[in-house]
Image (cartoon, rainbow, N blue to C red; front, top):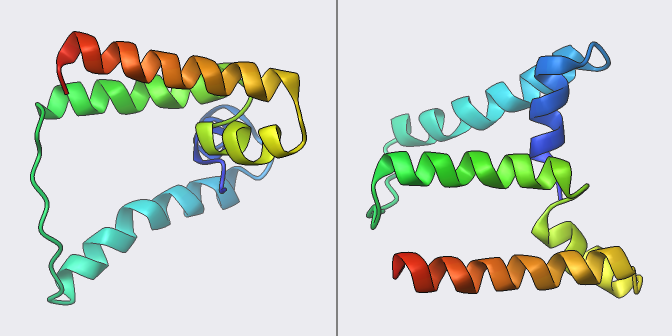
Length: 106
């Protein structure tokens, strides 16, 4: 688990390891571009509007910062350590996902 939301936040707002964080983020952007230029293709189909996907991604990033970790971190590492905070966070992730599917019919 790389902690991309923390790396992005620290790359923008912190002076500690700023260059390292920005280079990591740059690699996340350049990597897929180089892959596509190599002639390899991955077929993908957007099932929702691009603005909805972008808003969802931003909300996930903000939520991981507020929640002190991502779904994988809480769900895998936190629950295995019997962390009450992680158990509650994971339950809230699952419930929010179910409610989102019911509302948007995704």
